[in-house]
Length: 411
Image 1 (tube, helix red, strand yellow):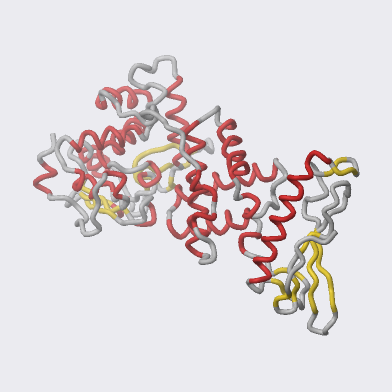
Image 2 (cartoon, helix red, strand yellow):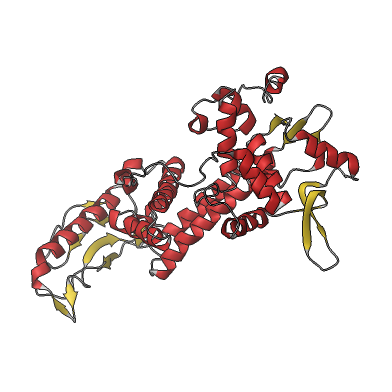
């Protein structure tokens, strides 16, 4: 039985289902076309018409006939749309590959390359790690070659999101984070490929989990006490917490600061665009509670221009030790690991350092401190953020540093 045979377009006849016999185990969709040499040729594909859930052990499952026929006719319609759009190449005897039929992993790689031009350092590493998790999922579930078209279904994407959520201890924020990445990948696809519209990509139908107030990176109720306790455990760790608190900048940027970035005559720090997450250079004032520590060290030690603010030196035992303005950079992870060890130390006050308190909490605490005296517009100048959602207001025309008299009024 022939189904859906119709007219010829540019030497290509419309696709049709060669048989719709409910007992046949072999169904296929056929296209007749005329090659450039004038010969009549045939293109055919069974797609998944002869596999589960339609065929099992070489026999058609009669109870699935209606669904099998519906699936087949939808494939015929799709192919005929391609034929109408001149996507069948009679010289090659096949359809031109549409972008949506390319492997999904290629789009992940394209997006990552795009992100490498948009974000800096540690942020890119975070994105790279998350993409590697998605690639692990594709590999472990035998989906490495899945196309964007096949991945672009609610079930496929939800399967990935559930996988990473379970991998992180049933974490709703994790589900939302990876959904955000997939949405951004899809947004990038539609931005660079005019043939795809955002509504063709299924993520617009997803909803985030509703999450209450976050319990991570909580601001410290008593920052001075927190810094005092942390400094007793490790002087450099305490100073780092104080630096984050008063500068409102991340560990990633602070550990890359060098002495040449400091202007101790005018009490300024120049944060280069290459070491800040936003990619925007920013100049900040050194708070009067931080300045004496820096000036005292510089006045009593030999410091070179390229020395790192929180740097390290090589000891005779082969290990590195952290100190102010040392020749070697110190990785962020060293401080993060030390803080984690501090959190589980038997003498650590867990009423101050709860599970929700981190080194990054000092930045949140610092924002709360500055908001008592400055507007959000002023705080934006310090942080260097360019996303108005961070502090709700933003202007690219802000000067680099805030008024000195205003800053000196801080307690």
